[in-house]
Image (tube, rainbow, N blue to C red; front, side, top):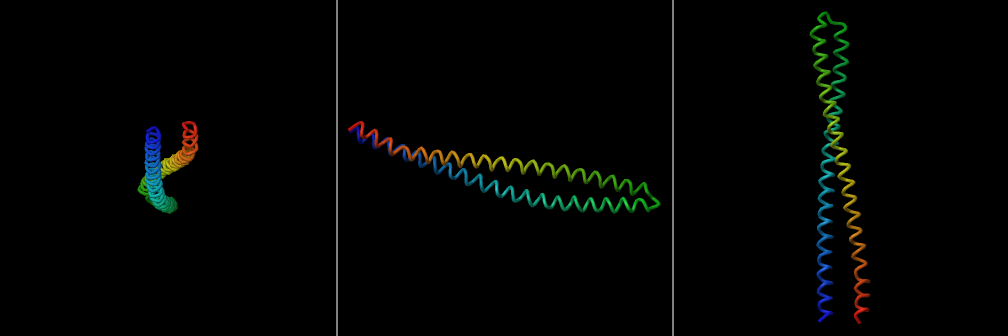
Length: 140
């Protein structure tokens, strides 16, 4: 009877460990996929924003040059200021996207920690059988 109870307890623990492993694996995979997709999206957005910034800088330089040669410096100065303001907004958005990239990197670190926990669980699971064998010997 004791052996049957022991076996039942062993089976319950093994099933619980298997559920934990599977849940951890699924969570890790989901985090990995979400992080990869978000990183890819942010990188694409970042490249697009870099191109916009470069175009605005070029436009600003062209306007600066034009405003030096033009009779009506007032209107062009306003245009230069508008472009400077627009450039400031784009740079702020660029900074925000860099923060998002950092958050994604942190998610990747957390995913690594989950992987470590999974490895630890596997290691503990490997120790269960020798302990069961010792328990069986002690009971015998």
